[in-house]
Amino acid sequence: MAPHTALSYELYPPRSVESRDSLLQTIDELSATSPDYVSVTYSGTAERKQQTLALLDYLVHETKLTPLAHLTCVGHSVGELEHAVRLIVGLGVRGLLALRGDIPAGVSPDALELPFARYLVELIRRVEREDFAHFAGGKLSIGVAAYPQKHPESVSLLQDIEILLAKQRAGADFAITQVYFDNARFQGLLDAAQTAGVNLPIIPGIMPVTSLRRLIRLCELAGLAIPLDLASALENADNKAERHKIGVEYALHQCKAALDSGASGLHFYTFNEHRAVLDVLEHLDIAPYTSRYFSPLKSSQPSHFST
Ligand code: FAD
Image (cartoon, rainbow, N blue to C red; front, side, top):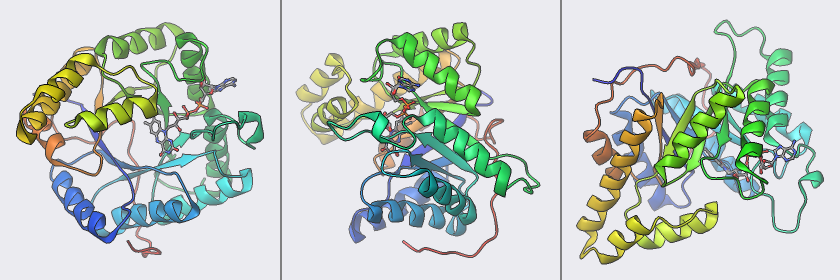
């Protein structure tokens, strides 16, 4: 059995009562795998962001799961971000994923008070020093994004690595990658990071994709080349069960390749669905354990939001 493999899942706040019910079932099913943490995305309108807080609150107070709160520079002033960090920590969350967020078309990063994620890492560390120095359990865990395939705005992969190094120096503890389908790119990221002196754990972001439509949409959004082998297998599949099997096998192969590359954890983009992820895990030998680099405490504060 492979020891010390951190396991985590990405969820997003539900958009309707029906999707909330299905998310609650997914949370229940995924809880049984004892993940190290469950991350919650943050984007969109003020109302959507409020729903992120509500889901974090639910995870802290109604489950045994450890949440990791995504937070973005986009859409916020420095003051709002400081407030958001205090609010999130006040809910009992002890881990944040510091992101810049996608800039709306035609807007320059210079228009943001915090133009890049590394400044958000610095802001979180400052708020922690100023407001939360009394935490007996020590510091907040801060994650950042990493890119196996060049970030669309970056000039080169080397720039991406330099930016990752800057986020590490600003105080990040670990990185989670953008979804990818070319395993050689993840290996390339690890090699380049090591050469540049990045020593924080880089966790591969894996998404079992069981629909061609979703695959194409995802690649468009993330600026990725469509993996032709997966796309053609999904296109030629006769039915839903076959497409499910194809998506699970592809993701399983990716997980094994990432672990062979030395990845110390696996982060699953779940789309708020559990079946495909559980089917992948069934074929992997991973021991549930508490990760070394992410050990947030949970507070016993009462619930402020409800889903
Ligand atoms: P940064 O690290 O700031 O990098 C953004 C770009 O700016 C890169 O091209 C980088 O090379 C460049 N850059 C950085 N610093 C400098 C500098 N000093 N000078 C010049 N150029 C620089 N988005 C959401 O809106 N909500 C989410 O919940 C969310 N979750 C995500 C989770 C993961 C695991 C990942 C990988 C991405 C997620 N995203 C999310 C998407 C992310 O916000 C976008 O990819 C965004 O475009 C970049 O965010 P970043 O944190 O990598 O930014």
